Structures are given as structure tokens and as C-alpha cells.
Length: 348
Length: 90
Image (cartoon, rainbow over all chains, first blue to last red; front, side, top):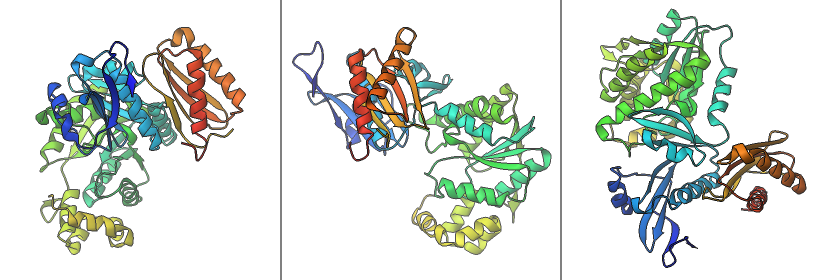
């Protein structure tokens, strides 16, 4: 416990918060939605009254808010210091913040480096020993030699299907060099390592294609924080941030001049995402090529369809929609816990 | 003295410094981020270097975010971070 200058009678202290409901009032005053499922949340209290808070979820800092009456008293510094210490103790060495565009300066004054700012949607900042430069260096080490222009496809591959394979083959036929970028996160049913391996196996027959990870700079919609954006603007906000990151930091290193994507007949959010890509990437000299989704028995192939069939335990049908390499994995022991998790989950 | 793991000490509050240390890649790497970097960046780095030499640390990566800390605070934060980075001490 620490006394703060000019507040002789009040005691301000930090404490971990487990019941996130006590944040509601403070969040509402900033027009923020609730943060949920955080890994760690700290509260700053003055005589039992919450005056500031911040949370950690994976390597993302979120929900940082300080009571208006207390701003400028060093509360944000305490919150951030506290969260950085907790993160480092947990072995996390780089951290990210997504916030409103106008809040960028508030975090950069604490040593967070601005990565991108896309008004009116969001800004992204990072903390650590040059994470962006390190990522770009890693990319430049796997770049095709003598490649003036390449195409890229970004997939989650949850899991890799014949639809993904068709799209990659199509791009590989139309371009000298193709990069398949797999979204890196471990929230999807199939962990990142498995999604990456199955993608690599599924394109092994194409010698002008490389598979790589998007690191933290291809942002999964499952990870993108939603608390500071109105719900009806969320897909648009995520897509704007993600496409700017791609255009600014990934495409130039790999000389990417076009981006391929399958049409999205079912998924409204992915549709919005694709519309934003078409709007933003050409401004950076990257064309967007939309390919009609491959169908089998009149059904457009999608990973969500495959997961639905897995949930229904209909493996003969699954075999129709995935390459042999993915199917073999599904029959292996390693797939058992993943299949069990999908089957215990009722979402569609 | 060997740096075995990542450790952190200090804070981002005014007049303090946040020091993060981790095992180096064979030598000493120091990155200084400071609100007074232009005036004192080199001095802070020299101070860190001399303290590391005193402690016999040769393989370390140091990242500091300085918020205007005075020398004795910088020394104390660095020493504690290095000690925390010894295995088994938290």
C-alpha cells in the first residue's frame, strides 16, 4: 500500500480482480463493453472504490481505464507496470494493445510503440524488444529468391480442406510465387501447429508455394478485442486493422502484389472482411482476386462444414471434403482430443 | 553471473524506470527508451554497462523504459532485475 502525493488521508492500492462485474460501472462511463475471460485483471482502489483497471489476455493488454477524476495522477502507469510484471512473470516477452485511434499517444508515452493507426477504427501498439522488426527479419529470411511479385493467401485452415487446396492451386497456376499465410492463434479447434502442418502437407506438391506464419501481424478475429468497438462495427474494425497491417508490414517484405481469397457465400462477417480488403489493399498496390469457392456435390467446401461433419461423426463424408493428408491426421491419435473437443461443442 | 530467465523490476511511474532483462545472444545488448533519451540516453546506457561489468554479467539483453529516474534508482532497479533473473529466485 502506498500513499499518493496530495492525498494524505486516502490510501490507493492495487489488487487482483476475479469478479469482472465490478468493472461494469467504470467501463460504462467510457462507453466500453465488458471484458470477459481475461487471464488476469488488476484493479486500483481508493478506499474500496475502483478507480482504475486493466487486463491481460494471452499477450494482449486490454480494458485499461482510469476514473476521469483520477486521470493525470499516475494511475495508468501503475496499471501498466503491474500488468507488465505479471506478463513477464508468466514468460510473455512481447505485449500488444489494441485501442481507439485517439488513445495511441496515451500508451506511446509509456514506451509502447505504435504499430498501426487506422482512424476511425483502431490503433495497435506493442511492447518489448522490437517485435515487429524481429518478425519482418524472420519473413525476409524465408522470402523466395529473385521474386519481384508474389501472390498471397491468408487462411486459418481449421482444418485444411480441399477448398483451401483448390484456392492455392489456382493461385499457384496464375502466379510464379505464392505465399500461404496461416493465422497464428490457438483458440481455433485445431491448434496452430496442426493447422500449419496440414497446410504444408496439403500443398507439398506445389513447388512455387511457401507456407508461413502471420505471427502477431495477421490478427485473428477471435483474438481482436471487441470491448472498445460498437458490436455492429466490429467486423469492419478488425478487417481494417488487419488489411492495413498486411499492406504495410507483410506485403512489402514478400513483394506481394495480389491477394487471393475464396468467395464467402455463408459467413456475413467474412464477407465484410473481404469487402474491406477490396477497398483498402488496392490503395497499396495490391490487387484482390476473388475465386469462386470450389464445390463438392453442390456444397461449397468450407472448414466449418468439415467441423460440422466431424461433430456429426460422419467421417466418410469428411473424407470427401479434405485432402488425404488432412484425413490421415484425423484418423491419428493426435487428432483424438481435437475431435473430442469439436464433438463436445454445440456451436454451429 | 548468468542470466537464466526474463525478469523485470521497476515501474512506469514518473521518476522511475522499468528494467527488463533476459539472456543475451553472446554479448551485452542494451536498448534505452527514455522520455529524456536525447539528453541522457547515452549516460543511462553507460551507467547500465558499468553496473553490469561490476556485477560480472557478460551475456544479457537489457530493455529499459526510463521515466526520468535518477542514477541510484536506475542502479537499484537493474541490480534487482539481474538478481531476479537468477534461476530459482523470484
